[in-house]
Image (cartoon, rainbow, N blue to C red; front, side, top):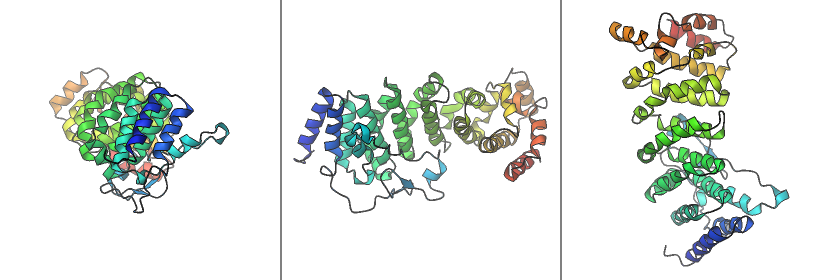
Length: 351
C-alpha cells in the first residue's frame, strides 16, 4: 500500500487474526484502529449524497428529504457499551472509533482483515466499523470500488448469527448509495432465504427487512421482490410490532409501483391479515397498513381481470379488495378511532 508505517501493522494484524484467538486478536485490531495508527482528520466528515454528518462516534444526523431519511430508518450501527468488568478495552476502542477518521487505506485493511479473521467476535467488530463508515457517501463509494460489497456479503452465510446480523447492518448502510444497489441486488434471494429460515422476530429477520426496505425505495429493483409478497404478508400476522412495521415498509414501497400491482394482488395471503385493521393494533402498524390498503384500493382492474382473480383461492385480491372481503366493514369501524390521523387515512380510503 506504499505506507511503510502501515504495512507492517497489516502483516502483524493478519498473523494475529489467523493464529491467535480471543484477547490477542482483539488487541491486534485495537493496534490497527487506535489513535496511534490513524491520522486525526480535522475536517468534518460529510456525506455527499445522503447529507450525513458524524457528530459523535457512531452517530449521524439526517436532513429531511435526503435518501437516508427516506429509507428504512435504521440508524447507523450504534456503538456497544464497553464491559469494563471484563476488561474489554480493546473492543471498546474499536467500536467507538469515529468513522470520520477512516482513510482509504484503513478501509482496505479492514476488508483484508475481515477475510482472514477466524474469530466471530473480531468479524463482528470489523463489520461494525465498516457499517459505521458506510454512513458516509465517500466511504460507500470506496467500499464498492475496493470490491468490499461482495466481500461483506460473503458473510451472509457465516455460521455465527451475530456475524450475519452485523453483515446485514453494514449492507443496509451501503444500500443507501444508489450505485451500490446494482451490486447488492444479486443478494436478494439470499436475504429472502434468511428471512424464511431465521427465527420469527429475530434480529436477522429485522436486519434483512431493513435491507429490503432500502433496496425498494425506488422502483428500479422492486421487481426482484415480487415473489416475496406472501412471505411479507405472513410476517404481518405472526410477528411483533417492530417486524410488522418493517415488513409494511417494504409492502408500501412495492404497492406504490403500478407495474407490479398485478403480481401483488395475485399473491397468496393469510385471511387473518384483515383482522389487523382493528383499534387494538398499534397505531404505528395500523397507519402503514392503511397506507398499503390505500395503494391497493387505488388499483383498478378490468372486469375480466377481477373475475379471474376471484377464482384464485386465498389471493390478496379476495382477502382485501373483493366485495366479499371483510375489509370494508373493518374500515368503517376505524372511523371512530381515537387517533385523528388514522381517522383521516380511513376516510380517504373509503371516499
